Amino acid sequence: MSLEVTFLGTSGAVPTPERNPIGILLRREGERFLFDVGEGIQRQMMTFTTGFALDHVVITHLHGDHYYGLPGLLETLEFNGRTRALKIHVPARRTRRLARFIEVTVGETEFPILINGLSPGDIAVDQDDYHLEAVAVDHDTEAIGVALVEAARPGRFDRQRALDLGVPEGPMFGRLQDGESVELGDGTVVTSDEVLGPPRPGRRVVYSGDTRPTPSVEAIATEADLLIHEATFGDDRADRAAETGHSTATQAGKLARDAGVRKLALVHTSSRYAGQRGRLRKEAETIFEGETILPADGDTIDVTFRDE
Ligand SMILES: [Zn+2]
Ligand SMILES: [Zn+2]
Image (cartoon, rainbow, N blue to C red; front, side, top):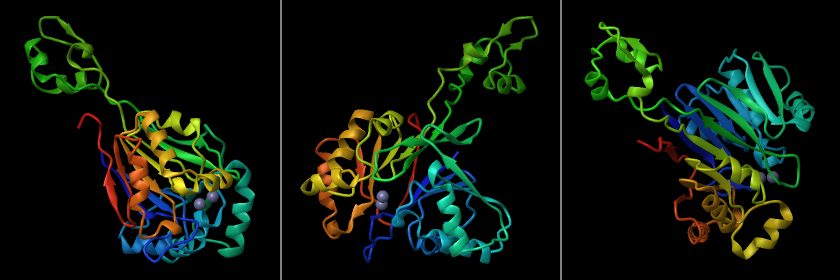
């Protein structure tokens, strides 16, 4: 089961010649989720050949750098002949404003646009093997973060142990792997517990959106495989970060450390650090010992299982 993240835009507030405003594409096997739609995102999707088969769009908040790309994206989907509904998730108190924005900029579309309001803790998508959850954040407007959380997977099947217990190779193996018990020819019952290891954790990807460092983000990012956290500023502008509802790279690093995150991706970096973004990574790395990355637009990373 593949899980990939492509950074379509990594700049905060205003773009730079190298960086588009924010947009993060998550692909889990055949499903595609777009987190935030900065201006020009549809062109980034073309440039990085991600395809447009989106299933869910999450807009963390209605600051221009997070949703001005929506009209262009919707027009492109329309132009491509989309007929399938598109679900757009926004903070609960922003549904009407977003609907009006779409009505004014795009108007009617051939495909249904379903706007879904989310409050922190709400489950936006609920499937057997994963869910998408809205996270409370602390910004200077109504905003959410978002987390994709996979369910635990069954433990590893101990083939040799099954053979030792007398289970013949064949369909009984599959039933044991599915958690069922099987009865052997001599009447012995073998249960799945005897041949399966402990459940293995699924993967967890958290995107903070715009926020000051927040306990709710830290909580949901506990042992996350990938935390995509904003790092709008460096230590030199810590006051400005607090004032404007943003984080510094050091704060993102501290949160990643405290949450026991595996990998930290710093995004939404201010254009003032163009050409010297490396210092933001260094600041995070002074605190966080896991891997810190400063993705460029177009970078794609695989999110692997911990036990892989
Ligand atoms: Zn922003
Ligand atoms: Zn913002």
